Image (cartoon, chains in turn blue, cyan):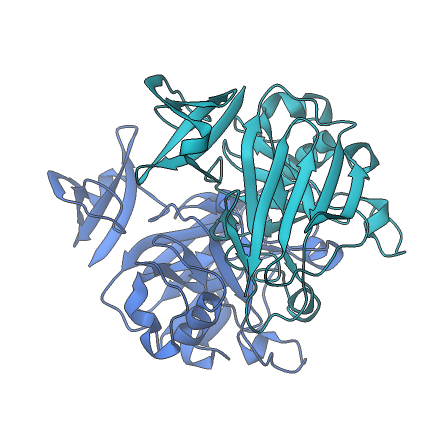
Length: 249
Length: 249
């Protein structure tokens, strides 16, 4: 099943995407909901971030190709992004004026479905609502110079997610392709992760409770590319569609 | 005015504290609310964290006495804590089994009242709902060894706040005293901050929007002390009461 959130007629709703039709539901897919009976063509609505998360985790250096030659980490290395940085598909990534080099990172994102505390890797995926695509936008000078990554990875518009949450999905062996203006800049497979999805979720849950609607960016691969005003950034993941964002200054 | 959140009869409510009486209100103090007419003696209710925050910021090295001899930072240095780490007054701080040395940090905490984006320091305090006390519990080995502080400062129970939010308050020139089992372990004044409250809020808001209910821990002073199971940790700030937590393993 594909869950979306969308704006139509100035009103934001959650919905189920069936083919090219959105069927409105009464509340977020992490809770009890009913179909309201309203529906609309997908082409007539504006998709929003498919979930309004509480806590937002992301995985640092989770692909060997992204370690820059350093040894691979010996444990998952999560970091936090503020919920205020979340935005949706087709929204604009704004480059802060004083940030210097801002890079794209295209990633698979996990949406938690039920409260998760001290869960084994073996059981972890049963706590997942579904999967979507995310751009972990990264201001490299702030990332290097600040004590933490609160703005380097957390400035407004630095965490687009979407277009939908797919619940019927196996996160393994999936290709992730990122393009800027149609030119491929990243290409990897989720099986190249150093710690796979269930290992990352289990590790976080050993100390930090994950709540329904919390999300986890699972990491990026290779060498990332600088974004410039006017760029069209697109990440495609098998079975999850395409996340498209434009860039402005 | 003093806002609280509390549990009575298995039901959680927001309220206004007037002397020793809690008057229930219909919703969080960051929104429109009305008094429901219900009230109860303070002694009959269990106080909870006075707000359920969205994003939680905290300030690193914001007192010269806490820099360990290193030069003072030249800009505010925020970091993020997960909302899942929030707990209330009189709750238990749980020491994770494999965390090693876990320290207390007693701090003033700011609660945002209205959306704050790119606000000057001069105007920043007008966006504040009020102030409370926080314990920024810190696992020092994780803080030193992990890429980020997601669990070092973010494990479950590592962010107690309370007991109430005081709205009629000037955050300057206030003494902060921390004791463990009655012995003073920290003593400072908010005027010793390297970046004062309004400078911290303004700096965050340059890049990261602060929403109503978001909170900011403003930093700790001096040398912090290790917590051990059985400890009673109390932070007192002039005009904000006392935040008391017990420690267990």
